Image (cartoon, rainbow, N blue to C red):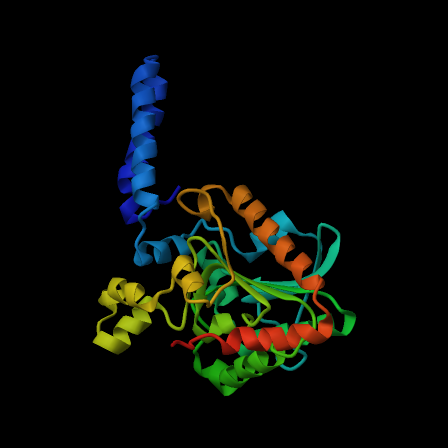
Length: 310
């Protein structure tokens, strides 16, 4: 498994234990090393800095939207295209069932290798991706189907073509329209939650963030480049941005934290999927008890309260 810089002592100890299992029958030595390993894991993973959590959120083995769809949902049927320009493969969407409950699920999709990342545009959606999302959310409103969005993007694609086709306008339109869709909307940030790219499918009645994901107005590197003209100060920017799940919950930006296995979702994707599923089901069931005509005013108040301090 690919490791991060701060995980090297843990990975080295894991390798040492694995080697000893093949060359010695002394279980006491192995047991002592396993105790040391658990202590090292606890000391490391219980005291992660914001920048270290950003690195875990970007881990190449972390489960992506399609992984969670395959683990959590059944009868997924992908729908394509914005009916204006093309189908954006950086943002996938379709109808599915969550333990029998009909839902519309959508999310950003990254690639596992260079070829797939180019096809998926590294999870950075174009305006046609956000227009596809809006088209399908309007379909969900028509049929009264709850909406689940899985956010995992460093940001919307900032290329010339995307700007020419109305990137900012597409995201702004989604912000307005998602505020006024009278079906339950649950948002889960499963990895990176960067800027308007995240917000384009991020307006909901419940916003949840996975334990080692981040949700921010800008990437730490972008913030450092703007504030200090030095992207190398990303670690300081991550600290200042308050982008981790506990900080976001404390500030009232999000509603729930989705637990992950020790070390990150990539350490045990199946457990991560079960945890995500449980949180999604809980919030969908709660929201279904709220009359449709009260959902929108409550959603409006939820976002109006953000950033108001006394």
